[in-house]
Image 1: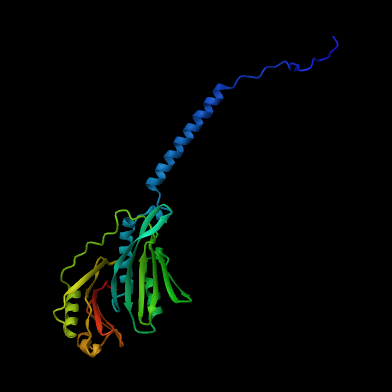
Image 2: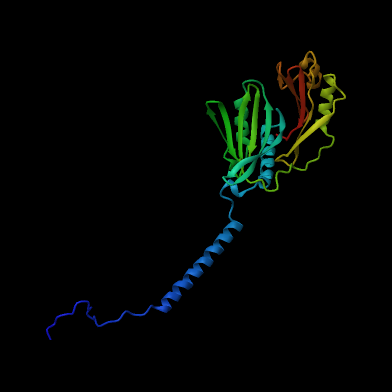
Length: 288
């Protein structure tokens, strides 16, 4: 033979391609299925047991009790020697949780009146009395001293000087799914020392028949209840301090042209001038 190879002819190597290993293929399929089942089980377990890792995993209805507890903690941290008022809850809807879903925010607050110059001392006092795991602290910013803390469940607590003699603390959920919405704590709104103090103040400024209106409430850390009651603004007397001085025993917490604040037992009363009218509130505070 000449050893020449005809064009287009492929010489034989002497071996044929082996057929696919069916058993190996089956093992790969079985392993893939088991891995998918394991991932699904781990995901289910994580959803059921792991704490939320982002705010979008907790609704407004979930966060409401955390905010209410934070307000009680703040009221207790202020102490029983100052005068505060609980501000009404603010619920706003329409923010964007994601580009495709709407949400809502909940904010509650505590406003404290103090003698001018004692605002930062109050922020530091409250910071030191809040739960240790909130990691509260006060820092100085361009806008003045500010308190910041984490109440858990992605609820932010802040405190700032609104103006001279007034400090405001807030607990804020940020934007999140609404869920079932926010329900205020079910704490009684009947007669109490706060109502008695407010009625006495209304009588002292010449409006004994003015009805007592809104109630805002929070549970105190010691198990008690803080509650604020208000009346609609009424015409101011010629001399606000002189009218209320008999009720304060001549020892108000704050006495300036715009605000007169005093304590009667566990209740703090605030009379705030708004143009030619005054707004009165009384708060039965937490022990402190």
